[in-house]
Image (cartoon, rainbow, N blue to C red; front, side):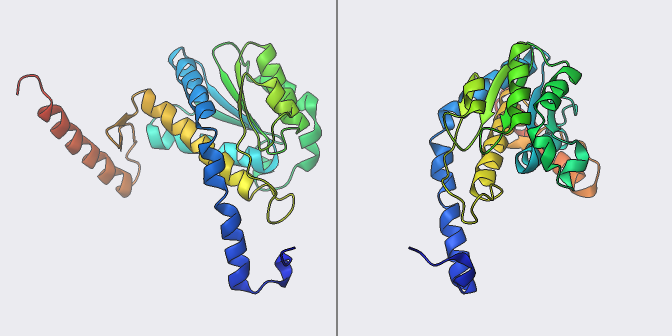
Length: 243
């Protein structure tokens, strides 16, 4: 039996946490085929005017919200393109709203409020795969005709059974038991980063390796936009049929 965390000197504690984190990348690699299915579904949805909607509670909801918030400034798309629904609303991002995780009716209401339908893709995020708010929201989204994706850390759970596409990076027990903000949360963030980024690339929001829709709202972004335009002109000139 390994020593408990609180008995370890700091260097050993950090090594233990790092060794646990090393399990995340192989777990995510094993689910890349399922991530690809989700990307194809999201691309098809956005091309037909639909939305990519993340749903979660607690840590999972906050991770989904972070990814959704980063998409518009990164790729220059409208905020409604990728959205996040968190149990308890924005206030739950800074103050715990744990009781609302158990509110299945609230999850269903959120899907009705957003008028989720056949053009949308809804991603339910829950490490346990059993959060009532998230499971109910995903079930309601599926009932309303949306394509549904489960992102969980455990297979054969209610969330996984509800979804059309299941992405389940199995990262194992957490170093701090039950604290899914660690390995499970890291895996969730990696998957959502890939899902949203690959979707935007497939939709033409990246030229080479450059973001082409950046709005220059500060000096850093203005410089980046100028560099994108310069490289874009060079590439178009190099590959022009008239040269």
